[in-house]
Length: 189
Image 1: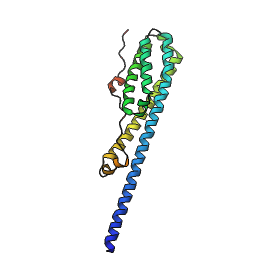
Image 2 (image 1 turned 135 degrees about the horizontal axis):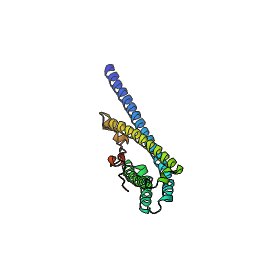
Image 3 (image 1 turned 135 degrees about the vertical axis):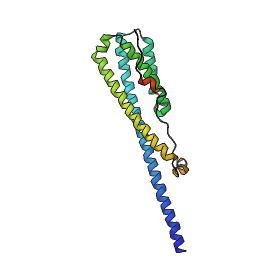
């Protein structure tokens, strides 16, 4: 009886330690993913704050390009909408639209040499490029965290109890049309 008691007690202790460690790993991964998403939203908002200044700068030289300005404004609003800031899938869709709109804006700016040479325009373009780099880095960090969390949720034996503890697989932040944002716009004047 004594040996059976110690064996059962040992199994219970090992099981509790395993569950405790696994739960803490899942919490750590979830917090990392949430932190990474927060970093992305900060960069998206920073970029959204730059875009009105960029539009106004280009508008000073190309005021007749109303459709381009409206397209960029709509796309900008979509990237900072509550749905986009809470859901990676909506954010990715809004990102694709914004990238296309910004390409149109920069294509318009190329037709105005004085604009392209403007110190204000160059500074805004530099800040926008810097922010885009930060968005890409944040997206890689976020997607890496999502990958780790999703793998942990699918691994045996964690997959048996993780969902019952409230842990769910997360969506990656992927732009739908990656080729569209990697290729420069084709411009002919």
